Length: 153
Image (cartoon, rainbow, N blue to C red; front, top):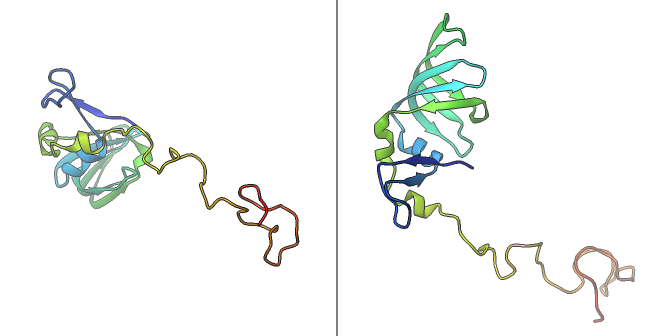
């Protein structure tokens, strides 16, 4: 997990002049804008962002690809870049201004789990015998099976 820090907007409760936004929000807001993507292998792709997904896979259009050495160029109508191969992305400076104001609060870290009463631990389930072989309804007897321990019926 990483964030992009900008000094253009101030978020309440944060130090003066600093706001935090998530990179996916920035990418989604930059849809249709020109961008440069450098891959871990060194090739660069210049084009317009069509869209991106949760894994930062990127679709570009009107792309010019430059080899690692800078001596070969390719022009492509469309291009798909896998997010795990991206080294860095350069966006226009005004892309930050397109990110919605409430982005930081909407994705804020929540305390307390939020997965029910047990704090998000374990499988939960229905108490009692659970599933498995043991049990009173035509089973083989015994107390075995998965889930929580048995009890008498």
